[in-house]
Length: 402
Image (cartoon, rainbow, N blue to C red):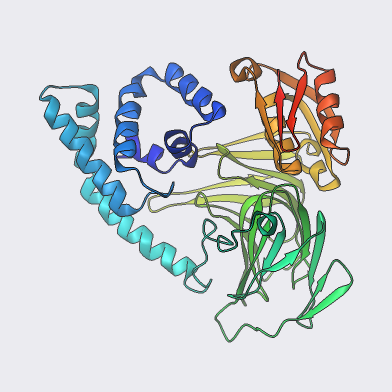
């Protein structure tokens, strides 16, 4: 089951199936070439997904069961041994265990989110359909209507008195309060092209990068300070030995636990790794599931990279500027893939940048620094200085590197 469930849980794989782009097509073609033993199961699963034609990229448990049934039927229909048959046959005895795991996981997830107003990063702020509204930063207090913020760089402060200060000038009275042990969770949605800074009620400061969703309470529980992140954020956590600060990444069951420190977390859904970089203090990167718990302790100057496919953590020494200068509107990189750099530029400016030949681009690494406070055209011009690329303007939202 795990042999193909990893693809069913991979948003990047599902995007390739339902909404292929040059980037996803190139990536999965390259992946299959490097992993020929998985080609048959990938193609079979892709065919089943196309047949189901789900309207939502996220697969429900019912759809997953239907996929599993169709997969077995396809195998039986062939009426001969195959790689897929052998793979599924070996894993079939674990289906009962998997079903139990799913039930337990569902109970666990419900328990985790039972006091969070059933928030879901994939459904946050899906109500506004006006594209102008969706390009604004949104602060949602409890289950209220989104408060729209126009500024490209916004700031939000939750004071100890319970009020909210926007952009250091506008004060909002927060009439919705936590009651007893039930925490009221708020959502801050920062679209591509925008950034935000939020000061939490405990004094911790969080800088949110473009394309980030952040969930946090008005006030923290008595025993811990837990927040939820999808995207990228730099944390300056206020020290409190009695209440650990926990950053929970929604896409994978990975969390970062600290007492008081400064660190950066990058957990975008489309990225294959969750990155945690420590600049000051100490953090523990924790991966929890039903059967095991992995813990990795970081020291300043170290990066922990948790791979979504292998579910393993790798730690190495890095230049932390490469991962934190975005808070100042700068990109600093050392021998980094130009594909990764372009992805960051896309998020920052809220534009689409495509490569005329993405396969060639994947083999190009670049070192340097970009000032993202410049206009997009100047940034692309600076990027191409150290490469053989030239850029072409299609419109104010789309560019081509060739």
